[in-house]
Amino acid sequence: MFTVSKLKNGATLIKAPIKGTKAVTVMVAFPVGSRYENDKIAGVSHFVEHMLFKGTQKRPTHLEISRELEAQGAEFNAFTGKDSTVYYIKIDGKKINLALDLLSDMVFNSKIEKEEVQKEKGVIFEEKKMYEDNPRMHVDSLFEEVMYGKNDLGRDIVGTNKSLKDLTREDLWNYYRGSYVPENAFIGVAGNFGKDLHERMEKYFGGNVKNEVKKWFKKNNFQKVNPLKKISLSKRISIQNRKIDQTNVLLGFPGLNYYDKRRYALEILAHILGGGMSSRLFTEIREKRGLAYGIRADFDFLRDTGAVYIRTGLDTKRLEEALKTILAEIEKIKNKPVGQDELQEAKTHLIGSLALSLENSKTVALRGAGDVMLGKKIETYEIISKNIKSVTAAQIQKLAQDLFKKDRLRLAAIGPIKKEEIIKILK
Image (tube, rainbow, N blue to C red):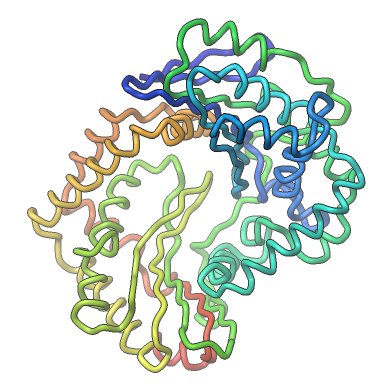
């Protein structure tokens, strides 16, 4: 399904045709994110992402970018993470040349004008406030800091108030020109793209970008963290006391990195615990006890570490009952192997969801570009299905025992509560 090749300028092309679709997604991923920053320029990756939609030499304003795409009914956006920044356009396959022209223009020829930088600061400050004002969103930031520490990885992707205020056009320009170079570009094209794609890619993405500044990105040039080191329970809990009706909670443990072969077992483990309406936590927390509207178990993979966590929102008066029920379910999956029927249902669900996701050209483009960018073998449907099917109940139990250790537990919560109350429940 996937083929990987290089353009003459060093950019990597990952293409995947999808039969039966009229759409195509063109996606460009750069292996730089918030953990490649420092305190002084915290938030610069995300800021640059915003600025690339503000205009190029060929398309001087944001309107000339957005109108050109919206006129075609295209879907377009970008997102910044800890390890990468990604831009994409999903469009009618007949209009692929427009997507190639516009996206290459954005990522390699943006102007990042001084006056636009100042205006966009206001936009990003409002975005930051939006997340902070929403307990369900902001609890993620508290959890990341308590999981990874007060460092580049644990810091909010958007940056700090001080760093955002101090960032200059020169800071953004140097980061952009030092990172957004062809050899750092991983271009995923998936869907209905017709013939002669490589030639068209050379036309639109094959040019050379003038290296005006010292290259910023170097592989593995980031601060590594060790969430496994022992710290006191008090330092593993982050509470923001707010007078609101519901307490939002994220409870979790250090997890696995992108390259860990146990990741398939973790996907099944998380699904059995809290992956759907028939999961153990949903059944115990919502259906049997009526403690919460929703509860979910999930995980994050990063280059060198990761996390597995459970999130829910509930009545503060019943928080103790909910936390003890969650911890009891964690102990059950550690102490007793999952049954074969439950295991098989989880595998079938994950494989079925995977099949549906691969009908979406955006998902396919991201999977291909992401895997190659991380130096991994691309995981096709066949490979993933085989790996999921091979997971045993014993492997899941062993993984639960390895990950769910009491002295590694982290908890972040926002609501009308105090840290002392949480410590008392968890001791």
